[in-house]
Amino acid sequence: MHDRRRPGQPRPPVAVVVVPCSRLGNSYSSPVPRLLHMASPPPASAAGGPHNVFVYGTLMAEEVVRVLLGRAPPSSPALLPDHQRFSIKGRVYPTILPVNSHEANGKVFRGVTDRELNVFDMFEDEEYVRKTVEVSLADTSEKLLAFAYIWGNESDPDLYGEWDFEAWRKVHLKDYLEMTKEFMEELEPAESEP
Image 1 (cartoon, one colour):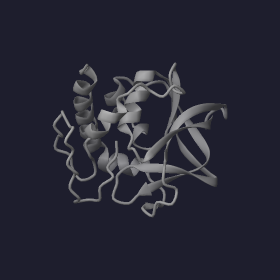
Image 2 (cartoon, one colour):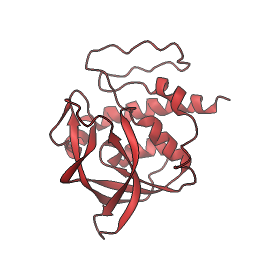
Image 3 (cartoon, rainbow, N blue to C red):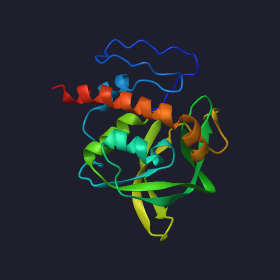
Image 4 (cartoon, helix red, strand yellow):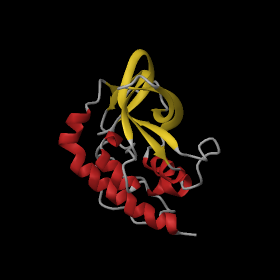
């Protein structure tokens, strides 16, 4: 779940929100408007888990994943060839894009259920596209297929430089965990509605 607004830009009004938005700072936005159209079952191509999911940004923090899924699925360090991780101007999280002769480091979660994949889908911004990619496990070089969330706009002028996980962890993890808890509090009532 990521914010598409520029810092200081107000949240657009949404008439269909049934769950009140919590107090979220400029770096985060409420996922509720997206929940209303993303809470449908996973696409047919994703149904039938378990799934592998390659993560390369804020979801590398297992604390964040535990808040989202109630557990941290087994994971291994992994590399995604021919992709590069970028910072995004005005945002605290990164993205990846296909770029020849580069590789994005991250980790791959194994055994992700359909429900958990749906939570990841709702958490990720609509500017991301979930795609199947081939990753290499860093410790064994074993290759496996995994889902990854890739930026949809390859020519986005707001992408720059390399995003640093450890720097993000030191500066933003505490606030990001709070935002993630608020996301789940908003998601749980929406999931329980008929």
